[in-house]
Each structure stands twice: as structure tokens, then as C-alpha cells.
Length: 309
Image (cartoon, rainbow, N blue to C red; front, side, top):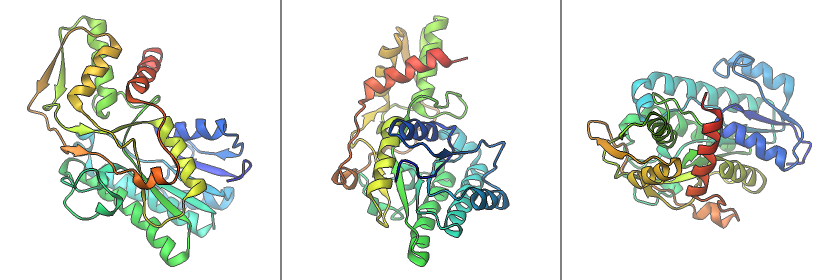
């Protein structure tokens, strides 16, 4: 991408989109375009097509999505599948119609089978049953990958897909009803510390293992792929390392400075036992993460304390 190329970041206010904007600006890209939800509802095909016809972007980072943790995915599955299907279909089709140079679609590691062999290779997609609690979201994201693949096959579009592992960072969602495990635990430990509570309740057994990637590393990886990769298969983005949720809770507890105890609520689901990505393809392309977990958590907690209100 040339520095003056017109680049559209869909979902620029979200955690991933805002990280992409920061990183692109840091690298000297000076012609970025985006719209708020109030200005452009990506679920409306006519509006999306009009936007692309008027703006004619050269490149598209498709980071817009309806996202949430186990509770949100399990409670609102129809919203998760509908919103995400409409967003990705409208943008991908409009990108094709307006002959953009390249598009990168962002999926999620939940696309892989619940009991996939670990670490999960890109080739494991569609080889087994999905985790039921986020099946609707996963199906939508799988569809996005397949859209990119088939538009490439039929029309020759340079549309690629990237599958990030569990993400965290500034501008994350800290709402306990809809957030992922990392921000939920940060908020729980912080509020328990401030309120002098003796215990923090953690969902499930804490035994499932998860891989975490700082969102600024993801943004850097996406730009790397946009500039260096044009394959038809999607690319996993992660660290290649994972940790038990109970170990994660201990790290967050120490970072926050909370001195109470952790109690497990065994009535709540654990979710998928393990989700570790095989990142050989990404590492072979010349990219590796730079922000380690404990350092990233410190950055996020400092940001949260400054912005919690």
C-alpha cells in the first residue's frame, strides 16, 4: 500500500479498528476513511453500496462486527448471526463491484471445531462441530472467509482473511454482560479492590486454556499481511502460546493489586477447552508479536483506570 492510498477501516471505533487506525497513522498512511454507525449502518446494503460508489477506497480492512463473550453470544445468537452476515456480505460485495485493490477480512479463532487438534491449523476449518455457545457468531465468520475465497475464485478479487486469537487492549468492552474474559476480570478485580470486597467470582473451573494477543500487535500483523500476503487460505494471527484462565486471573489480580481470594462459580460454562492457534504460516511470512501478556495487561489496566467512567 502506498502511503497516500485511500484506506477504509470498517469498524474504526472498535478495539480492533481503532488499533488499525493508530498503527496506520504511525506508519505514515495519510488517507484513511471511516464512518460511525450513525453515519453508515453496514447492515443496509443500499447504504453500503452508495458509500463505496462515492468514496472508491483502494484498500479495505473489514474489522466491523458484532462481538461479545460467552454470555452475549449464547443469549443473542440471532443478532450475532444476522448482523455479522449482513455487514460482511455488504462490504465484500461492494468492494468487488467497485474494483478495490485489496480487502482483508477479520474473523475469529472460534471458527474452528470445538475439539479441534491443538494447535489449530488453518486446514482444520469445517472439520468438526462448533462450540454451541458461540455457534451463530462462528458460522457468520466462516461465511466471511468463504465469501472472500469464492469472490477470489470467480472474480479474481484479491480478498484475504485473517483469524485472530483472543484479543485484548485499550478501547476494549468492559461491560460485564457482554465482555470477553480478559476485560471482565480486569473490571471485577478493580471494583473488588476499590470496594474492599473479600472475593472475586470467576466463571467456570478456570481450567480452559486461551491464547491472548494485544490488539496493537494484531493491527501490525494485519498491515503486514495486506502488504505481503495474497493467498486463498486464511491466516491465523496469534502468539502461539496459551495460558489457563485461572493463571490469567492470578496475573490480573497481581497487576490490579487486589488482595482478596478468587472463587469459582461452577454453575457457569467453561466454553471450549482450548483454543491455541498454529501460527507457522504467519511466522513464516516474517511477522511475530512483540507485546508479552503481562506487559499488555499492565497497559490495559492503566488505560482502564484512566477511562473507566
